[in-house]
Length: 193
Image 1: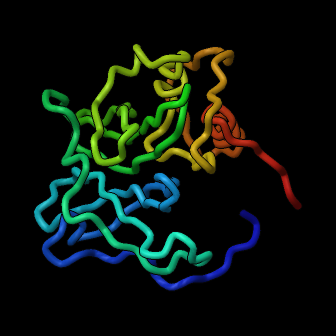
Image 2 (image 1 turned 30 degrees about the vertical axis):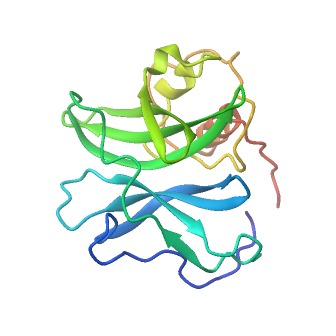
C-alpha cells in the first residue's frame, strides 16, 4: 500500500444503467477465478441510496485488469424494507466459515450510522441477515464499525472474536482505530517506513 501505480479508469458510469450517475467504492473479489468488482452504483434519480452492482473482468488473466463488464442490473437495489435508511453504500465482501458475506454501510435518517449484513455466497443473490445471528460473533465488530470499512485484502477466512465490545462506533480517522478494525476483519497490519 506504500507504492501505487496509475492505471486507466476501470469503471465508468453506464448510460441508462444502475450506475449512470456514479460508480462509488466497494471491493474486488475472486468469484470462481474471475475478478469481480462489487461496488456502489448510483442512478440518475438517486436520493442518497446507492445500489450494489457487479462488474466482471473481461480477461481474468490480464495482470492489469484493465477491462471490466458491468452487469446490467444491480444485485441489491437498496436497503431492506422497513429501515429508516437515508444512505446505503460501500459494500465489503469477505469469507467466514466457508461462506461469503457482505457488509454495507448505512446511514439512518436521524444520523445514526450502521452496517447491514448480507449472505452473498452467490454474488448474484444477496439476502439480508440479522447481524446478531451471524456465526462467530461478528455482530460485536459490526456494531462498532464505521460507515467506511477498511479493506482487509483477499476475502478473509478468519474473523477474531475475542476483543471486548466497544460502546460506540469509532472513526477511521484515527490510525489506531483503523488498524483495530482491519485486524477484526482478518487483515494483517505491517508497518513500513
